[in-house]
Length: 122
Image (tube, rainbow, N blue to C red; front, side):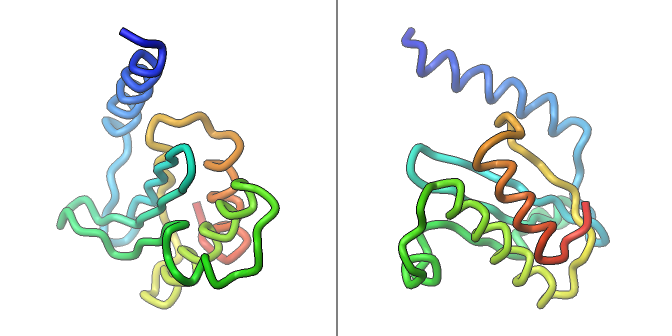
């Protein structure tokens, strides 16, 4: 087993532990963040219905139309603002943050900071 696989297994173990405690309700849905090597994805999920209410990712044309970002952290901050704007359009203000087993640092933290700046409360 490579170290890459061990790292992924550890993240999935942390994810399971976190998800035991987190549940997205219609009043307070869950903001889930996934980070790959190149991109960042965020979605707001209502776990009672099992449906995604709002989503944003760095693959979208809205992000690609923006002027060149300095870093992946800057892109993540923009994604946080974008998802917060889309959530407020749907009438969502309060959410619960799911870091998905990733450390609350760098790009994951940038998404949450961007979402807070744009008006989401968590």
